Image (tube, rainbow, N blue to C red; front, side, top):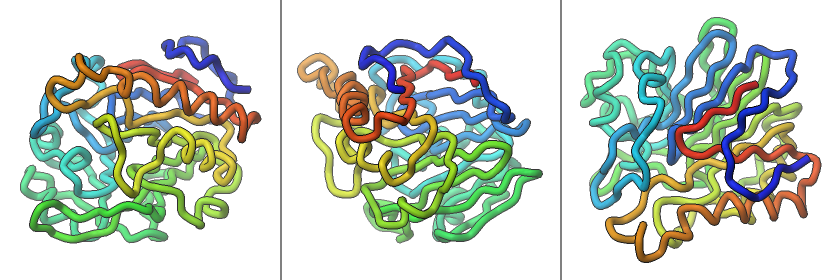
Length: 267
C-alpha cells in the first residue's frame, strides 16, 4: 500500500518482528539508520552551506548524529563526502567507503577507514554491511582521487539498502531478495539532474527490481543553489510526490513512506 502524495511526517509505528527501530532523514543523502543496536550514519552533510549550495531548511535533530557507530560513504563527490561535516564526528568512528576514499577521509582526522569494492562485505557485530554496485561517477572532483561509487546493503535482523547516488543498473534485480527497506534517491540539489541519478520515475522502476517491503525517498528537499529556493522552489518538494504517483502505478505493493528532512520513521 502506498501513502498519500502529500508530504507529511510519519508518526504511526509499523508492526515488525525485527530490530530495525528507526530511520531519521537528516536531508540530502544523510540518514541515520538504527538497527540491531547500531547507529549507522550515511553520507554525512551536516552544515548549512557547502560551496554554492545552501540548505533550504535548518538541520534538525542534530544531537542524533554526534556519536554514530558506523559511517557509510557512498562516493567522493563533495555533497556526499563533506570534510567539515566529518570533522564533527569522533575521530575513531568506523567509516566504510569506496576504494580510494581513505586518503580523503584521513584529511578529516578519521583513521578507522575500511575501503570496499562492490561485492565485498564488512561485519559489525551481528550486522553485515555489503558494498553494492552503483551507476554513478565516484571520483573526487576536480583532481581526484578516482574511485567508483557504491551503495550499501545492510544484512541483520532486517535488510536495508542505501543506494547513495545511482541510476538504474542490472544487478538491482538480484542483489537483495526479501529486502525490507530501500532508501532511494529521487532527485539532487538543483532544478535538473545529470547522468547517473535516479529521478522519480526511474526510482519507481527501481522498486520493480528491488521489491522492498518499504521504500523511503531521499536526496530531495535539502540543498539548492543560492537564490533558487525563492525563484524555482518546486524542485524542493515535487520529486517525492512524483515518486509516490509513479510507484503507485508500477509497484503498488510497495509501502512508500515520505519523510521530511529532519523527521523520523519509527518502526
